[in-house]
Image 1 (cartoon, one colour):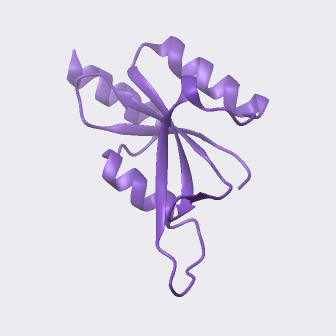
Image 2: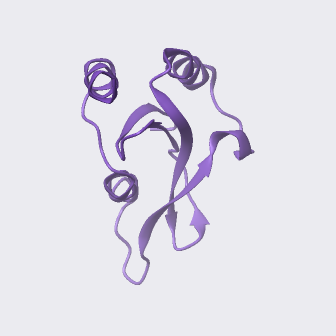
Image 3: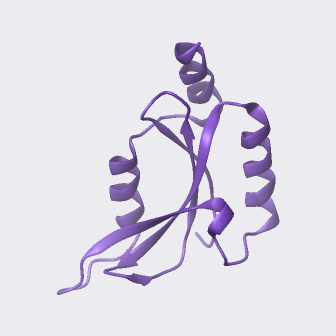
Length: 107
């Protein structure tokens, strides 16, 4: 069953990543600044307080209804703790330590 979830997620969402890989990819969206460390903050989507655009919410809803994911995160690029723009919605596959990028906005 897990293998089927992984294969289906890859077919629908493309490459799958670990949370550490997602963190690096999200951080790379920020330009380099001397003296500032690029990173990403993850929040469960239920606790995310900023507005999420309709197109991203539709993609999230489809992913949630697919039953492939056990948890959804909003990953926001940061310099240290200072949040920037371009959040990502990430779905974590149940039983695997792999995630799919569901949506991005402000890109």
